[in-house]
Amino acid sequence: MELVWVTLASGLAGFVDAIVGGGGLVLVPALFAVYPAAAPATLFGTNKGAAVWGTAWATAQYARRVTMNWATLVPAAAAALTCSFAGAWLVTQVPATGLRRALPFILLAVLVYTLVRKDLGRTHTPGSSARREAVQATGIGALVGFYDGFFGPGTGSFFVFLFVRVLGYDFLHASAAAKLLNSATNVAALALFASTGHVWWPVAATMAVANVLGSLLGARLALRHGAGFVRGVFIAVVGALIVRTGWDALRL
Image (cartoon, rainbow, N blue to C red):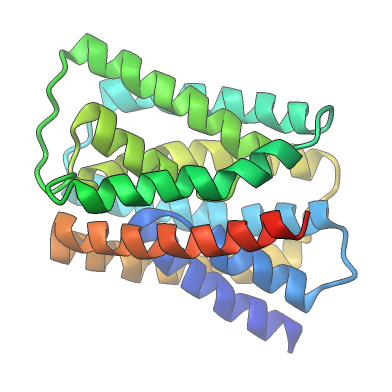
């Protein structure tokens, strides 16, 4: 029965993650609730073992229908992967307590900014030169990739927001770009967890199937309904993240 519950949660996580990121908001609490006696590292590793497939599948779906600037995104993905490793190493040396306390306020600022700027992310108008866009995207990949390795909640949503705010992408193109970079950070995290034996592969494999199916449905909805729909889901997911991370911060 435990496997049924986490598999259903994985499908929902894949659905949410494919649209705007934040699938971990669904799947990680489900894993902790169903397997309370398990080592946290094992649950995080099993989460990545499932999520990496859904995110990769969503990336492929977006790439077929949305124009992706590979010259910009490939070096950004490489930076995200490398810095995710660095963040994962640092968290073994330094506690993330301060970041956990600050995160709800950072997310609140993102939400307020998005609500105030009602036109934000509705049109796709990158304003930078190709070289500058690549540099900016690589910086975003490095910053958020490091964050994902060090702590992680809301990684996909941070990618989306920064691609909209800094590069002038609409929410649909930003979500497509975020999927590629998030795939890279997931691969880095999974490699780290797998190398230390912190992945339940049979559970991860079953959840991965559901995650891919949820991802397929979420990506199709995003592609069908466009940037306005993705923006709405982004606001809902960030709001949920504020509640979740705020509750976690109060319990520290």
